[in-house]
Image (cartoon, rainbow, N blue to C red; front, side, top):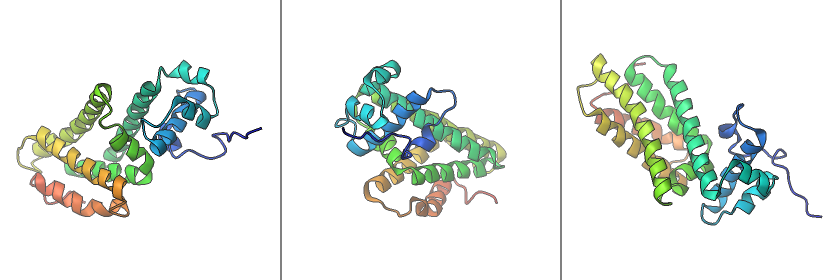
Length: 216
């Protein structure tokens, strides 16, 4: 008889991002398995059977929580972005001053991706170019992050830390720069570690809005 390894015997790389007290354990286990399968095989090569097998559940359990492979992928990406956003907001709350808060957001994003490379692959590579539904979801999630950045750039303008500027445009420029740096790292492993990019990236982004650096 073929042995099926339980998902509990070996922690999933996604476990730290997908834990949620308000979700059924079986649903969480299926999501964790899906994250591993999509990261390993890619969206198109992955199958529902792969996710069921990796989660040591059943197709009945899968379809009880998710309508399809596309459905679980959208749910997974949405969940991971939500967790990332919460962690960024937590880092921001610990800082004082608008520029320090923006700086904390940058450090938090790079830090989270650095610790979860396979999940970065799902969010930034696998989710791109998969059709209208996926593109709409990514646009919605990117807009949420851009609005977070813009909010603190607006505060920096109000505080007099930076001169008035188009903060919406600046927020998307920042988001694009971060996205490209992390995507390159996922593809090539450079810079190694990802956090090594932080000082220069931080300096470039702050100069782009006319700020020399966040106060410490």
